[in-house]
Amino acid sequence: MRLATAADKILPLKDLRVIQNPAYLTIIILSRVTTKLGTLQDVTTKTIERLFASDLTYLQQFYDKIDGKGKTKLKATCPNCKSEFSIEIEIKAE
Image 1 (spheres, rainbow, N blue to C red):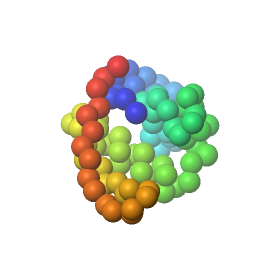
Image 2 (image 1 turned 90 degrees about the vertical axis):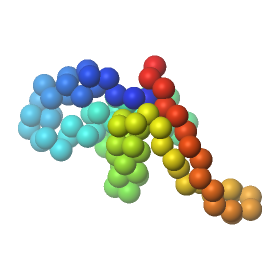
Image 3 (image 1 turned 45 degrees about the vertical axis):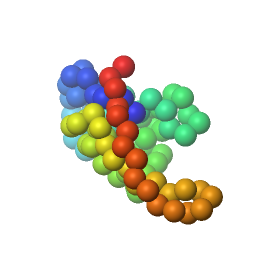
């Protein structure tokens, strides 16, 4: 995921899908700023629409964290020993 540009936030407001359903703004913005999702290199609005609600919520929360600060702290779990730890990542604009 990358930092949002002004265009990422403004251009979708003119989209007919957003005019008809303002909640669709989230779908469009996330599809614009998500650069890779798992093994998918091309993330579209259809990709975001097909996410489980919990996954969409996670992406929204992650977007909110990085869009405001450019840095975020994530909780992670080691897949081998199952110990939990925090990592801080820095998001840079492309």
